[in-house]
Length: 109
Length: 116
Image (cartoon, rainbow over all chains, first blue to last red; front, side):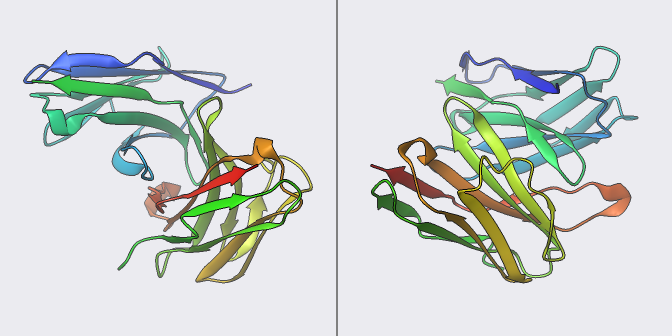
């Protein structure tokens, strides 16, 4: 069955550092991969989408890579800030998305 | 646009009661999704509609769950009878089919359901 794995342990980093979150998947050949941010008590918010034929996508301080050979996506936040603290979810699919369980990021001063 | 609107935001009910959750998608969006989120299972897709027609309901846990979309601006998710294990946050999301079939989804604030 399809499986999406994100690190369930929280990632704690210091302000100004680069945060790197991982999304691994199995039994899946997605055309697209998306990343969402979720704050406590709120719904997920779309951040970035990357296609299977794209290696890298950037948006301001965010960067996503997509390696279909390794079946892995990396999500980077450069110059992280306390306001970046949230849970980050990866999702695979097109019209219908399957979400990972998310990784909680905590950025401290 | 006000975004996806869900009501109620919180619902506390007793086991066996009927629960109805409501959703108003973003105007013009042609896809609507219902998700359930729990700590144990994460965000799970229950059912989704395209142009008001149910496309995939394979995530609906059992016959106690039903969803309707009578028009493009309204959808309901009903649980009858409710059970304590249905306690979760239920999200509605909508999207507009973009080029190449990719859809970024816009989520509502969710309904936190507690079944006692």
